[in-house]
Amino acid sequence: MIKWITKLFSSPSKEENIDNMKPEVHEHQKNNIKNVSKKYLIVGLGNIGAEYVNTRHNIGFKIVDFLARKEGLDFQTVKLGSLAEYKFKGRSFLLLKPNTYMNLSGKAIQYWLEKEKIPLENLLVITDDLNLSFGTIRIRKKGSDGGHNGLKSIQATLNTTDYTRFRFGISDEFKKGKQVDYVLGEWNAAENEALPERLELASEIIKSFGTAGLENTMTSFNGK
Image (tube, rainbow, N blue to C red; front, side, top):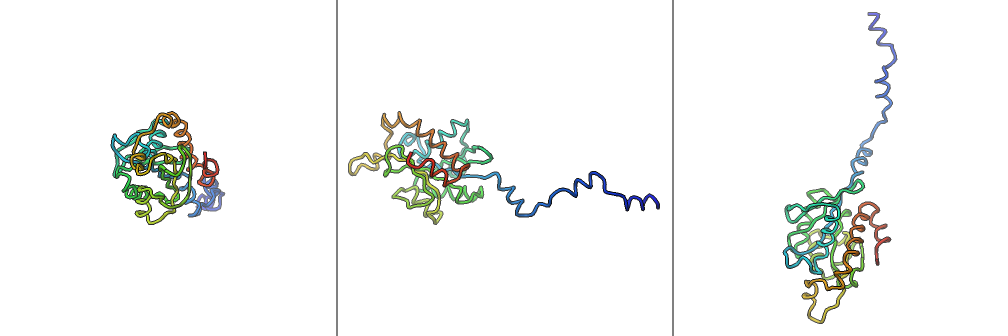
């Protein structure tokens, strides 16, 4: 009886004191902790098939391929495309090459956004642009499709133009009526020589998008 009374009125043990000192974690704080590691969908637009590998229209594929090789990543065949995961500074970048051909790119993007529960603001679409001189970079958080079939598909499928696109200039050095031949043509000798430096810059843009944020990335890289 005396032992029971002594235990009742005795001070808590060291272990109990430590537990009582732990700060209370509220639900919104738990959510913030969960969101520290963010996931991004980086989509390079292009067409599948050996005949398209070195074409101007496939610059999106070429950029994500470059980053994957640089970081020793392998693409795996998945539903509606090929996918590689790149982890950098607490972020997870899913590099996607849709296998739907350019005109149905939106289908693959919608599927992987939903499957991985990636918010639209964490989507970056890499595409060629005839209205920019070769290698020029333009990053925008929204905009029109500019006549690009891949962007048309994305806009129609996602029902919005509010997604970030990274446009890579391929210039418009083609004769009247030869646009398709030019876009689906291969890089010339001068372009091939300049591409490695441009691809290196493009890989830095991808990393900046996830770590520094869109606004800082636009400020740092637009026009370069």
